[in-house]
Image 1 (cartoon, protein in one colour):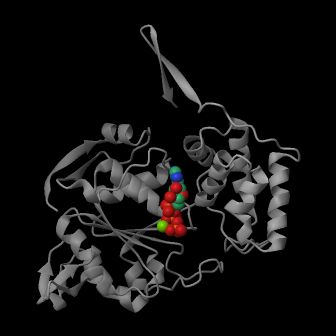
Image 2: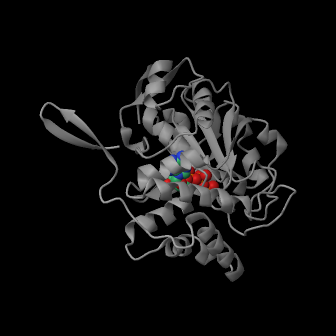
Image 3: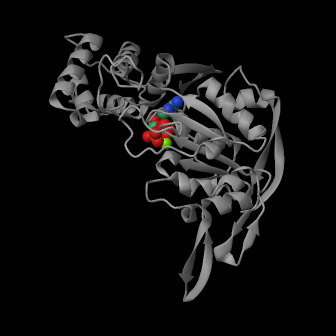
Length: 342
Ligand SMILES: Nc1ncnc2c1ncn2[C@@H]1O[C@H](COP(=O)(O)OP(=O)(O)OP(=O)(O)O)[C@@H](O)[C@H]1O
Ligand SMILES: [Mg+2]
C-alpha cells in the first residue's frame, strides 16, 4: 500500500471529528492512504472516553520513540477505541492478537511456498513499518518475555533486519506507530481472571507509554446502549447502567479489599449483549436476557446472586416496555417533515 502525502488536522477539526470540546493536540499530521482497505470501518455508535482519546491522539501526533500500551479489564474498549480513532483519522491498521503460541516470527514474517517457489511473506510488524501504519498488538501479555525482547530495538525506532529474507533491512516509515493492549500492565495477573498473562521484561516495558483503561462511566455506558438499542426506554437504560455498576462492585478487581469475588468480569461487551437480547428477542424478560447474556456462564450460587441484583435494580415486578419507534428528532424542512434517528 502506498501513502500519498500527509494531511494536517487542526485542533478544531479534531474536536469536530471526535465530537468533543477537549483536545490536547494542537495539530497533527495524518497519512493519507491510497488503498483504504486497511483503514478500520466506522462504528457510528462508538462513545469515546475523552481522556483516553486524548492520550492516543497525543501519542499518534508525537510518539517520541515510544510505543503505547493500553491496559484494562476484558471488554472495556481497548481494541475498539484504537480502531475507531484510526477509522475517523483514516489511519491504516495492521492487527495481530497474541496467544501463548505466538512467536516473534508471526509478527515479522515467514518463508512460504507460492506456486512452487519459495518467497517471503511479511508479517504485521514488517508491513506496518514499510507502509507507515499502526501496528496493533492485542493481548501482548500472552507472549513470552524472551520472545518480546527481540522487538526492543524496533520499538525504539531502529530498523528491522529480516535474517530469513536475505538480511533485508526495513527502515521504519515515519508514520509507523506501535500500540498494544493487555488485560494486565505486564506485571502478571493478580486477579485470577486472566490466566496465561505473563510477567514481561522491565527493559521491554520501559519502551512503552501506559494508559489505564477502565469500564465506561455509567453515563457513557448509558449513551452506548442508547445508540445501539434505540427501543429501550430511558428508565431501563438507567437500570442497565446501574446493573453494570453493581455487578462490577462485586467483581474481584485485584484490590486488597476482596469483599466478594465474582468469577467473571462484567464487560461492556456483555452489557451490550444483554441489552440486545432484551430489545430484540420478544419473549425475553430482563431475567432471561441477563441469564443468556451473562449468568449462564456462572456457578448456580453466583447466578442466583445476579438474579437478585437484577430484581433490586430493575424492580421486583418489572415489565418490559419498548419504545414503538426508535427515539427520533423531527427536523422541519419547509413544509415537509423529515425524521432523523437521534
Ligand atoms: N466506548 C464504547 N462505545 C461503544 N461500544 C463499546 C465501547 N467500549 C466497548 N464497546 C463494545 O464492547 C466490545 C468490546 O470492546 P473491545 O473489544 O474494545 O474490548 P477490549 O478491552 O479490547 O477487550 P479484551 O480485553 O477482551 O480484548 C466492542 O466490540 C464494542 O462493541
Ligand atoms: Mg481487545
